[in-house]
Image 1 (cartoon, rainbow over the protein chains, first blue to last red):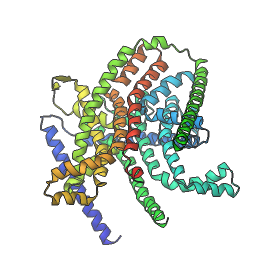
Image 2: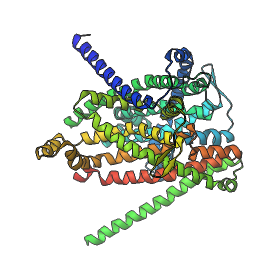
Image 3: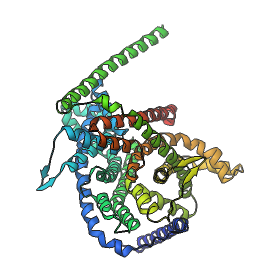
Length: 274
Length: 276
């Protein structure tokens, strides 16, 4: 690493440490100034890190499964949104608008307590791992919820590809799926990718809601189990919880930002050429 | 001649739209009805019984509106402050704004609510907890912390929207107004913000919808809003499907009008489209 990069890195670290210190001092002096008797005991709270490490794995599992459902459903709905027959488009539009305008928690409750009563799924095994009812329904609920956002992103991406591309592909004798698979989607991907990572970030954050319908041992659930009166380090526990989420989400946000600037540049260049 | 042609085209358009509406409505009804009748084979719907509880839903709605209203006011004002901090010439202020925004944007709201209420208000603050009164309105302690969490959290999203709006105004605008002798506050108030408003409106309405949706999570700290109401009464009677469907329709009646308004404003204020 050359010294300029290193110096820049050190300088930024210094700046942000200073800013964090000032921010914490301001907030702390406002709140602790009220006259709290709470004492911070980080060493005792940090003994429970293994609980968090167990939880983060379940959170990632939840995320991966719901992402698969969201991506596939989102693509299907986006393609339905672009069908030439208007009523089908409107049906897809209704789906999108309903799920976009509902809180994720309400969708989860509707699926778990509503549909879960009617459709009886007890467990599901894949890759030698067994998943229970709560896990399955929350994955479906988050998948459906986020698919409504993804569908809009996919649609915008597909529409951003110029119409002549479809015409050219079809005049070469390609069918609908060939046109989509080989011509449209690879080009649309560039437009889709940055907002898609944004939705993935939102999905990770949504998985925290599972504890409200019973919990499957994800991060937030673990902390709810930890924070009982005999372990009065609640402030520390929730701060560590936030830090754990930040450690998954910030890299994803940075990736999203990087992709946006990276793909944005090449898009701008293309427009200049046009 | 031209007029009749125009009228003919318009008539055709109306006819087409009507046809589309009828076809779409029947297809949607068909699909929903098919879905419903499949469900009905395994579950007895008792809508009449469920609808008797509308009073408690309305009470819940009031609390949801109070929490979102308080949260919105706080989010807008704090969001603007943070946005101005992030645009300040002092690196320290900028960094403080950046830290605030990024640390809140990247955690789930539920975690923030739990942190604010259980991690902070219940644990750290000294007892007894004071009653909060605002302009003669007695705010329940849970509602207060819920709304505060909502406001602080959404402020991080709002500030990004404000910042991008302000940055979308060309720098020469500020320079021109400053050279006319306006102060920083004046040039913001009279020159930059009115122009930025146009850019801000569509994402802002989206964020207001997000705020209303997020208020559902206040059930984690037992604020008796819509979602918690539905959860409580579905514990008393086993009509969960009906109750949660009613719950969903309550949220949709709040959020769908805003999203339609947002769509309308977006078209109304779309500068690029009007120029072309």
